[in-house]
Amino acid sequence: MRYLLVLTFILSLTAPANAATGTVREILDGDTVDISVNGTLVRLRFAGIGAPELHNIVPCAAALGLAAKARVVQLLAGQEIRYESLGLDKYKRIIAMIYLDDVWVSELLVREGLARLIPAYPVAKVDRARLIAAEAEARTAHRGLWK
Image (cartoon, rainbow, N blue to C red; front, side, top):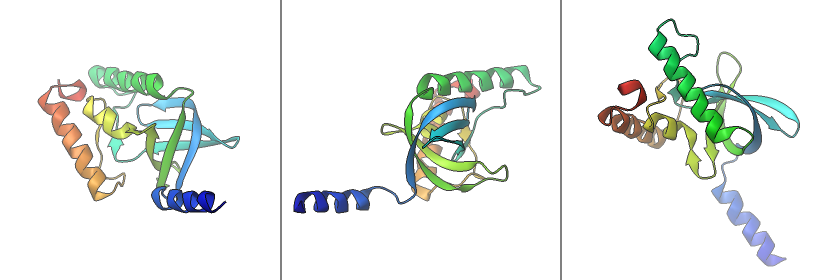
């Protein structure tokens, strides 16, 4: 019993207080998903990034928006994810740090050139530095948005 109490205490120190899990039900675009949390549908907006819009008037941007959405579908459709809420945006979506296993999905999309850093969506300084580095890597390698 003592071991269980100690383990519970240690886990409470390592997990953010606002962390939760849910199952991805729908991918709306390259930076927004709907998840089910205890039977309730919740809309999440990926923190710190923006993917090209699906209905962009510029054809190459719309194609990149479709590519970003397709990648999110490949990664997250039906998956159990962990997320950390950072607040709500003006559309009442939860701005969230979204993780699949130990992979921060925002960073992955930026590194692949399918999204870019958007300062309007908050992330911690250390996480912003990771996104800046990922975007620089994508630019240097001429991936996605940076071709």
